[in-house]
Image (spheres, helix red, strand yellow):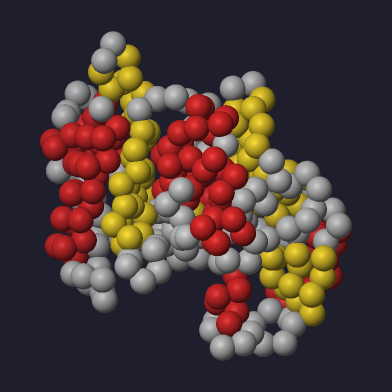
Length: 278
């Protein structure tokens, strides 16, 4: 299918993009790599009258480190994240997850900020953002604000990003701790039926703290608090993973019933923890 007719605008700066967003309001959508937005436009699930392209805005792409924090520009391509020596050394979980996204075409065109802002409930990156303790930099005409990943993802395709704000950067604490991402991909789309991201902090050979996040089985990514607490208390992978469905009300749908989803959560959590512990 073809998208509905729209007017294309190429933003030359963040301020220009914000001006265009203010001018066109709810009739506008922001375009970065396009691999999240364009498919839904072709299906007419989204019919914006105006597209504001930020893909060539100077300063919105790149990977750097400042004061122990990895800073990733919102329009940085997935392939660049996956191949970055800095990311591999100081945020290896993110490099692994970025390598799971779609196929080579998507990874070379899609952007980290576009995927995170789109907030597809089966996307890979949102779980990684939570497990890594990432912070989103949201920029509006009044300046920038910081929102933690735990607070950023609100519901299905809904985030804390305001209608007149841009996601301009993602900040991740540098860490070379134990980590893993285990995913059961949909064979057609590559999206996660379930994906479990694990980031562990260890001391003396034992887990001192853990962040475990899940994507695919709910309306938004979620932290598995019971699993994290069990790991911090010294539980092994199997014992901690047994708590992966605790407190979660899974629903029956086309992907399976609630008990099947709970089992998927436990199985893939165990795999991810076990690999991270190695």
